[in-house]
Image (cartoon, rainbow, N blue to C red; front, side, top):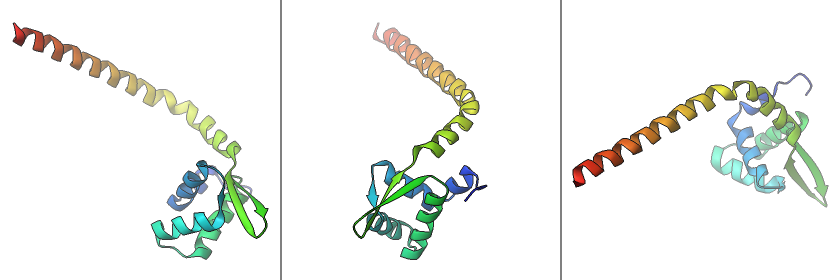
Length: 119
């Protein structure tokens, strides 16, 4: 699936959920299929199609164990997504730092107010 952008793959909620399931460790396709069919109400062939997209785009790997197919997350494409997101991380880290400062200020003001009322 050369040319498919990582965010095209990750933009689908079914594929994101499959990756969440696989993040817990290697999973048989039947177990993944069962959870996805229950949560999203889609057919087993539709789940298989999503697994195929994940496999062909490099987000998942599969290995055969007898008649079972075991799927696992492939980390490299996720690292590439993380690297891309890294250039934007400063935007939300600054906001989180500011939020932390405001929360600390609020706690300090509350303590000072409580001390004033206790007198």
